[in-house]
Length: 106
Image (cartoon, rainbow, N blue to C red):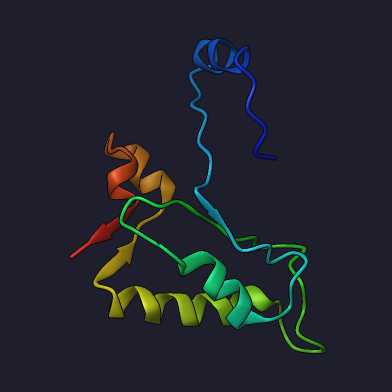
């Protein structure tokens, strides 16, 4: 849910887990305008940003599929224009890479 508590880190470490949070969220569960969500995600976007979108319970564009499908199409195009590419969080964590590799330039 994005909440951070200083007591959380030791509990996570004891369980072999890591706390990871996003740097940008599009509010795709409450907004249905793909352009508005895209602008929110990409304003000031830099390599290393971690974007939050939801795969369930997302807002719908009338009878069409969830808005996140439209946003993803636009977002991937925008990343390409900016010379960025996305990688999954599991991929970044698997390779022990930090924040700077989650959204890579080049």
